[in-house]
Structures are given as C-alpha cells and as structure tokens.
Image: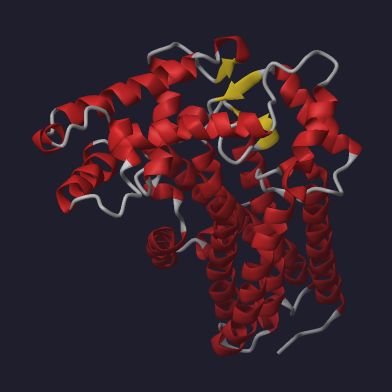
Length: 402
C-alpha cells in the first residue's frame, strides 16, 4: 500500500499539476462552449428565459402538461405587450404612425423604409427588446413544430402512428426501427413538454467529445513523463534484477490507473462547476425529451446523462492511457515518446467525436441506445487489460533489462 501511495505521489507531482491546470484553463477558453452559456447567443437566453418564466411565474418545475399548454400563449402575449410599449415610447415611430411592434416588423423587408425607422427597428429588435423578441420566436418555433407533427394531445392508442410520422419528417430516418417508434411513442404518451432548454444540449453535443479529448491528453501528460523519467533514471533495470521487483510492475500500473482516474474525476468536477456557474445544473432532474426547437428525445434525466458521459469518458481515457503506458515503457527518451504519442492523440481526437455523436448524441437519438457505446468502451477496456497482462507476463519471464 505504501508503494502504491508513493508511486501515485510521483505521478501527481506539483509542477505537473500546475501545468495541467494551466492547460485545462486554456483548453476551456479555446474549445469548450458551455462555459459562456447562455450569453453566447440570444436564442440560448430565450430558451433559458422560457424555462425560468414557466418555473418562477407559473409554478411548473420540470415540464409543462398539455392541458396547460395555453400558458405559452400567455407568455408570448406578455412579450408582445412589452415590445408594443417600446414602440409607443419612441417619438420617431409615433410620428410615423406606428403604434405596435407588429406594424414595425412588417416594414422589415420594405426597401423604402427610412434610415431612422430602420434604426429604431434594429434598436428594439436587437438591443432593448432582444430578449422579448427571441422569447417570442422560441414560442413560435414550438408552435411551428406542432403544426408539422402534433405530438401533444394525441388520442390514446395512436401514439405509435404519430411517432412513425414524426420519424418520417424530412426523410432523415427512413431506416428507423420498431424500438425507435416505441421510444418516441412513450414520450408522446407522457403528454408534456420538457422545460429543458435544448440550447444546453446543443452545446454538450460538441463539448462532451472535446471533454473526452481533454481527459485523454491529461492522462498523456501524467503517464509519459513519469514512465520515461523512471526509465532514464535506471529504475526499470534495477527492479528487473529480482523476482519481487518484477512483480512490483503490476502495482506501478495500478498507481497509474489511480492517478489518471483521480484526475479524470477532478476534471469532471471542474466541468460540473462550470455548468453550475452558468446555471445549467439547475436542470439536473429535468427530462431530456420534449418538443421544442430541435426535437430532442433521450430516455433519461439530464443528471443521469451527465453521469453516464463522465463515467464512459473516464473509462475511455484510462483505457487509452494503457496505450501511453506501453509507449512510455518502450520509449528510450522523451522525444521518441512524444513523437509516437502525438499522432495517436490526434487520431483519438478525430475518432472520439464521431463515436460520441453517433451513439451518445441526444440529438434525434431515438435511433440509438446506450448499450452500444458501453460495449465499445468494454472492448477498449479488454484491449487495455490485454496489454497489461502481456507486459506483466513479459516482465516476470525476462532477466535484467538494460
């Protein structure tokens, strides 16, 4: 046990942790989009506003039942009233005889509109009244989706028929399965609109694969310097001189797994802290299913979705770490180790998003399930264990290695 703790401390040395912290900050600023949600777009703010209004002003916590669907129109009319007030306060618009925002908006495509009127239209639409405008558009978007394929108030027994129609929209899913129809039908049967803003899921669709790459690079930064440093210091030949020393390699690998898994856990906590900072964790118990925006359908809560992703990406990162462990054991110096590891990391960075968007994506995910990604992760784990046992067997059989 003491040796295990000692090896973990050698891997997680202070200088390397500082470097990892700086790299993480840089990575978030360059590649992670959720940390500026919802201020990165008016559409994101509008979806958050709708959930907040329905929760704080109308008392709906995680979803809106179909029987209360008219509440959306009340929220929309309130936004129109606020926009009309802005129009009435403008002396320029009053002189032009414009008394409502609807009148002003009709002039948007009029080539003869004066510069002053256009300036007032832009001021209200994209400055003073931007939140009202986009919240109004968000609700209209829900109405438009409902016109294409009504999924609320479906007559009992016709849920599967409506689900099949929904899957056929746009011709994107001609190869949908019976399970896909049943999944969508089960959500339709619930007869409610999830208040989970789909803008959050839009971000995470791209951010989680990048988060996985961050974990892989973190493991690389931990293991490669540690193993090559040990080799250059002559520790490996020294341990190979005795049978007991050769048996200690298994504990050294265990220490690498513990160190990398710990860093992955810390990175997951940091990601959750970022989500909390942008007020995303408040949706922890919300269902990832509904009818707004992009039609997301995923059979789990948002909190469960986060946990599943954190666990799977950690297993992926630790499994890939085994490859780096093997490379660093065989590399004669840092240059060789880095030269081999960088191309592997690039390949992983390319394949990981394809893997997650194909199987873990919440966007129209009714044609996928969680079993396949778990299966692929299991295969990675088996490959990693095979490398470990092969190394262990080789270490036990060989003589002193110089």
